[in-house]
Length: 145
Image (tube, rainbow, N blue to C red):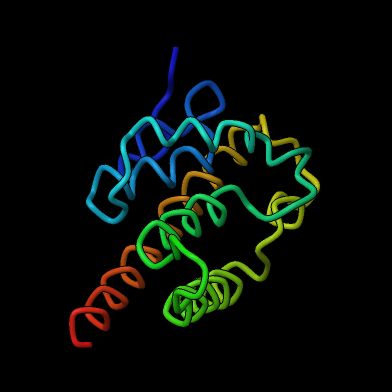
C-alpha cells in the first residue's frame, strides 16, 4: 500500500513514483511544463538514478521541465535563457543540499529506509519549488523581450 511521505508530492515513495518522475509530474500538473502527463514515462528509466551514480532524479526531472520551457527546437535557436536557468537551478540546489549527486545525498544509506524516503520526498519538494520559481522568472524575461 502506497504511503504518502510528503503531502505536496503525494505520488513519491518507494512503491510510488521515483524522484525523477515525481518532479516532472508535479511541474506538469502545476503548469510549469507544457507537456502531456504521459511524458513522465520518459523519467522512469532514472528510477534509483541508474545505480545512484549520477545526478539526483529530482534534479533531472526539474531540468527536463526547464528545458520544456526554454529549450530549442531547431539548429541555431538561442539557448541563453535555458543555460542561465539550468545553471541557476543547479547552483541553488547544490547550495541548499551540498551536492546534486544522488549517492552523496543518500550519504551511503539504503534508499529503502523510511528516513531516506522522507529525506528524498523533502528534496523533491524543495527542488520543484526552485524550478517553478526559476521557470516563472524565465517566462517573465521571455515576455519582456
